[in-house]
Length: 246
Image (tube, rainbow, N blue to C red; front, side, top):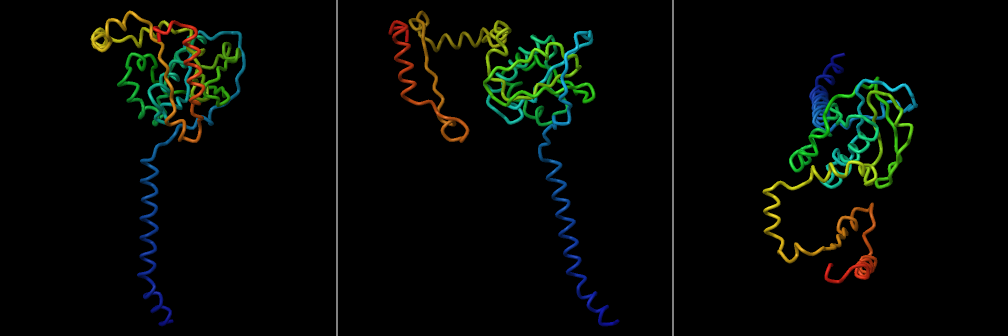
């Protein structure tokens, strides 16, 4: 009995260290989990969509998960998605919103708010009500226009269109004039631009070729533009316009 008590006493420091390690590990896990980004779980929203011809008079909303903003995409990708959201909102007679309950989305809105506030202000932020929300799932193609007529008669208060980056001009072609107005440079910016452009160039049409290759060659998801294709495209433009216009 005495020997057993002695063994317990001797093993106590080791057990104490083990308990300390376990407690510290749990604290670290809790802290890391607390401060790490929590992406909003849209899978909890029902995906049953149906057509109801009896239109509801109450205000209805539409939103995207805003993949480009959540994952800190460039301003161009963000604009594509926001414009597509606004275009579909007009088409479906709904109000475009950001999900106020999506912490990651709102923590990444600085770029859009700072660079183009005239566009960011077009989308309001309000929390969605899960019980009054329907999620319509698109195929994840980034640049393919998709539209289902059933969305026009879906009467759920909150409609989530869950898809890719919505990078097709067809989503926002109906609001093109508004987009041009939102992006129009201020008087001060126009004065600065005129200083950069020579008068003789201002009187000529310019066709510029924009080729993006860098990240497309290294990200493992895209194919870079073939240089011969670009050269042939430029040659084709020369056949369509006077050489001095290019």
